[in-house]
Amino acid sequence: MKIRIKDNSVRFRITQSEVTELHKNGIISSTTQFIDNPFIYTVEKTDEQQLSAAFVEHRIVMKIPGFMVEELATTDRVGFDGLSGKVQLLIEKDFVCLDNTIEDQSDNYPNPNMKC
Image (tube, rainbow, N blue to C red; front, side, top):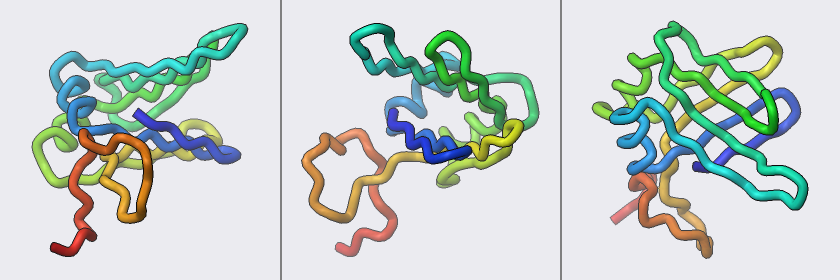
């Protein structure tokens, strides 16, 4: 899982296996271990009707409605966006980059803009 934060915008990108895990277990989580404290970012399935997020005790939790999880897991839908207070939220499938990158992309979704 990747996150991108810029001002009042938070974007989560999730891989194929993470979408599967979220669909099956209702939660996915990753950690960046800083010297003093971990920074944890989590996506959690909820019964609510819209995306929401909270930051509590070194953890960002994005809550995603169950129907959105279902759609991500079973259709070609790329993602969802919403607003939580002043924070713009986006969760989307992580596609293989079109440029040369050194990161492991083996679990990313095929990029629909790739030409074969």
